[in-house]
Image (cartoon, rainbow, N blue to C red):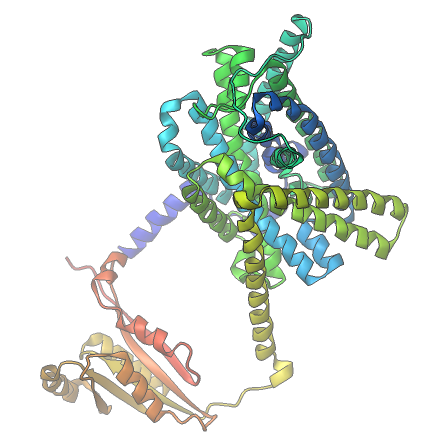
Length: 620
């Protein structure tokens, strides 16, 4: 029956995640430029669906008329994107094995800056999933408002689907994500082209007044403008993903990655400026009453309400925003694996699953982003303040690391390369400061507090692994003392066939065997002694009184009494008789004494615990 249960579980696993792949197939899981654009650039490209809106939401605090500042701010953000993309273009060629902010910072600036970059990126990847999924659900509820109260549940379902798709492996997820990404690009460019044609056909008039009136709630100050600018910088999130994932490209990796980065930057700038320009010309501003997204409103203006192109736009936008989370599902596990390799994360994160994916990282990312969705009610605007701070921190550290690298290794035109990265570091550093100041009270403080905690975790894990390696080293400690005597103890709760099997095993280990019975109910002791006299095989039985009915405490006290810590050649082995039920769920019907005993002695030196399973049959 157990085998049948296991076969059914394996069939379900293969249905969801596919057949296992051998390690030799890893090279065939690499991505072409077309698929890589969908996998690594979907986050950046999809941000055009909400970056303009988040920027305008801040500007309209100064009244509807302030929305016109979105266009010059968008131009500044586009210039910033050019600088950042140029800097990462150099990083890709300098680090063909993957030049994420962690690797660049760690190699060139040292341990702590590298860990700051790693903590920033991992935090950002979790937020990327939360923001992208929330924005995707917002696009869906704009098209179907009755779904708005169920946005959290819908978002959690989307994260579950994304997790399953990514657990199936890189190439399959790349194939799945490519089609929606390119559909989104076609429809968005159709929106921009149609909107431009309408504007030109109307004689290229001056911008229309805002369609909705917002009263002045805040004076239009430089601080407010900088807040809007930092919100619009959400358009840059995901730009670093391609440099992180260079090894995932088909050969030549660096060349293909650089080409993909250039294509992504061009597409992102075009879409971001196009959406902002049309919203500015047609007077489209955010609607906080109906919760309809800015892109949805723009689609109604350009395509008309309740038209097929409008619904296609909303569906494609929702889909790309949901699938944009795949950038994080591609990079979070990979960065976690690199950190695990460097002994800053648990080693489990470096293990490839059946489908050649870093399964543990994928699952942890899904759980963490789901928690954020629940805590923040699946609202994009509430998550945005937490979003881009880590991105620009990692941007800045990466570019500073590249400047240090060019100064160290020199090479052809190194001064020009250092200048490009230096300008990038200065610009992103300024934006980082702007973001920290303007978004601090809105939630950026959470990230500022969280990153040091994350770094402390990295360092604690690293210290542990270094300590373990040092203590296990044969070069340091040499050959351990040989064991000359094995004192075996067999705890029993009754006398039955499982106990007899354990006694046989104990006798095979040593001639020094003692059984112990913890007496929690004195009325049962005579029956135990009577059965032991017949079946105990001459092995002595110790009765340990337990007036407070504890099993563990008397046993631990007894082991301490018979153990001699001064003898390096003596070891105490506890042999636990344990019956195993025919069906897994039946095990829950029995007490877990064996497990509790194992846990009690797990951290005690010179004590070994061995389970002797006795398998039961399902005779019902």
